[in-house]
Structure formats: C-alpha cells, structure tokens
Amino acid sequence: MELLISSLPLLARGAGVTLYLAAASIVAATLLGLVCALAQLYGGVVLRLLVEAYLYIVRGVPLLVLLFAMYYALPYAGMDIEATSGGILVIGVYFGAFKTEVFRGAVLSVPRGQWEAGRAVGLTTRQILLEIIVQQAARVAGPPFINTCIMVVKGTSLVAIIGLADVTYVGKQIVERTLAPFLIFGAVACVYFVICFLLSRIGQRLERRVNYVH
Image (cartoon, rainbow, N blue to C red):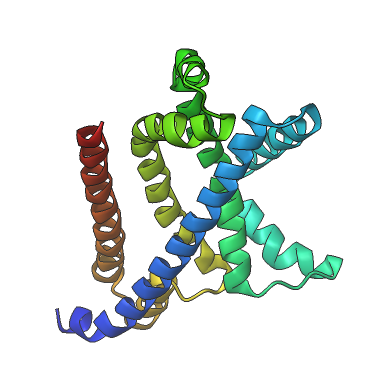
C-alpha cells in the first residue's frame, strides 16, 4: 500500500496526460466525423469516393500500425511530427472514421418525410438540416457517440509505444523500477475505469435530457 501511495503523484500526472490526449482526440475525431458524414451524404461523387476510401483504409488498419507509421516512417519521408501532436492526429483520424458512420447512420435514420414537411412550411435546406434533422439525429447518435469516446480513451493507451508519458507509460516505468505489476497496473486499470465510467454516466444523463426535450 505504501508503494501505491508513493506512486500516486506520478500516476496522477500520467492520468492528466491521458485526459488531455483523449479530450483533444475526441474533438478532432468528432469534427472530422461530422465533415466526412456530411460529405458522404450531400457531397459530389468525387468527394464521396474520397470519404469512402478514407473509411475503408483507416478501419482496415490497426491503430497501433498507424501510430508506428506516424512516429517511425514519416521522418524518413521528411515529415517530423511532434509525438503529442502526432498521437492526437492519428487517434483523431482513426476514430473519426467510426464517428463518420455514427453521424451518417443517425442522419439516415430520420424519416424522409421530415425533409418534405420542412419544405412544405417554407424552410430552406440549411434550416431543415439544423432545426429538424440534426436535433432528431442527435437522439440516435448519442449512445454510439459516447461508446466511441470510450474507445478513444482506451485507445490512448497505445501512445505509450511512442514514448508519451500517459498513465500506461508511467505505470510501466513504475513496474520496471518496483517489480509490482499487479498493484501498479491494477491502479492504471482503475484510472481507465473511472474515466470511462464517468463518460458513460455523462452520456446517460445527456440522453435522458435529449429525450425529455423531445
């Protein structure tokens, strides 16, 4: 127990890095997912093909391989990206593909009659999309969106392989020094559990609020 208490400041610092990486990656993935979903639904043929190629390629390659490629392969091509920025970029691009499908599916779940009803009362396409479609799609997109956010949090654990001092990396360093894997990695697992549990609770609260409003 004394070992765990003495390791708490380091683990807390690592947890802060994990939270920062997760938050930044979620924002990046959400923005990319929204843009790609709208492009796939309402873009031209070329734009749709580009988005589909992105989705197939990214979802078909493990996140670990993409991180290795960013950290080790890109410097050989003359592109040297700082590890933190690169990690956020890769994780955002990777999970952006999954969020694209979440948003696209949510918009498609709204009945076509909603578009016709909006046009019947004189609303523009932009007004129909923002005031009718998006609000109804949000109810459908909520649970899978939170689920992908939880996946992002757990996915950040892979940045330890490129030397970022997240909670997994810090835990590994402590274990190498103290030879107490069960205690330290148990604490690391608790950190991820708490973050993911809080995210799921926030998602449930937001879902209840959206359902109450509607």
